[in-house]
Length: 604
Image 1 (cartoon, helix red, strand yellow):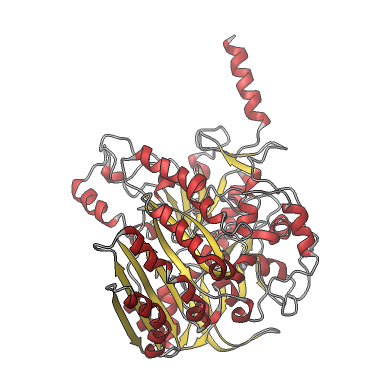
Image 2 (cartoon, helix red, strand yellow; image 1 turned 90 degrees about the vertical axis):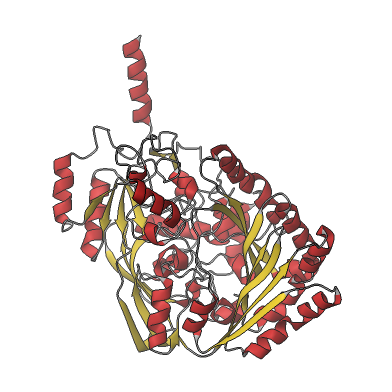
């Protein structure tokens, strides 16, 4: 009987294709890993979790005490080849807060990473992973809410130190002529902003200074404090230098033979089509930038009066963003705060005037608020003066895009949804208010989720994460998916979500994150990654894989895609051509029919 059971288990495993996992007979020997390390110039790093000194037998009380403080800052994690900034994916296997006697285990961390300094390191790593059937991971800074920059049993390419920056005043192709910056994929936002500033230019970067521009940020669309003036980060792309899933070195532009790959990389998600080595983007002349913050404390206000004041703000947004300003807001039970507000090329007096109707409404209610306007000589000064330090490992997130039409038609329903969540203990943070319409973005060709073009408010729902309260944390993650984000989708069911800040359990992510572009993106992935080397959660094609309870990454059996839907549909576009002719998404008029056919019947 024992032999029969063993045979049954072996047969079941053999019937499912899984990536090779440490301890399996297929896992490379130490000698093989040593040979591989020599082939990548000794740049292979074996993962020792950052918090290992907080657990026996390596316990170091001084180091661990310091790490408990710095754990919530980005720097220790982006300087690591494996550490994470999203606590859910750390899975409590090795952090500085669980008991000392709890063993430090790899869990979801990659087993090895290669510190990439040149293209051959990516090519050799990719081919080694393919040969030995090892899970392949692309890691940059680790700014990632959806577990894309890690993978149990994985081998990562760590591209954080690809830091070259080159600026030209005279970039030229068929569709653009002007200043441009070429940056290594590891260049972080503040580094790029400072380099552009030195040449009297601006570059579109995220609000968090340590997020790498060329990584999942731009590949996922990328909003910025400059977005109402210039569009999304994906609207700035000119050229991608990459290694694709077949190990080929390619340069993809809008007007060359890889324009389909250019289109997919510009908004269609990271960790999917290729490993990015560098990105070339548009630059803009620098100049004065105004800033503003407005803080309304609840203090002794009744709940109804407090929310009445909050409800007065959304109708003021169209005039603010149409003037080229971008605003973030935060709502809690204690405070409603607006800011930082960025006003590129808007004098501070004009920025204050844009907010004067709302302030007049607050004055009429007799409410006390704090207004902090400021004028800066350039974008770098604004960025350093207004952006707050980023805190990580404190929350999990969900998101939804709310269109302008909804705010103009029924903003009170939006406020009611916010109120229901905030009073339930949820903080609505990162409400990014912007205008990235086609009129602002201009002549672009990319795969940005179409819902962005109609968006007025990008809403992020944040639930707190408190270490050692494991059951509470997991319940809040569940509620993001089952309760909180659905309250937003009910308001705008035909919209979508920003894939870089959305829920990693987002139902029907294909539609929510990619919309009508999904079928074409699937075809492009198949062309450039035919062996499915690239995998990450909620990426194009990811419904074909699942991470099992034992953390193995395995193929989903035919006919069972875990409720993701739509994974096997193909679009009607071959992705060839010269990058379109001024069409925002590069698709022809037949796309809506394909979209309706593929997604008909998908109900959130």
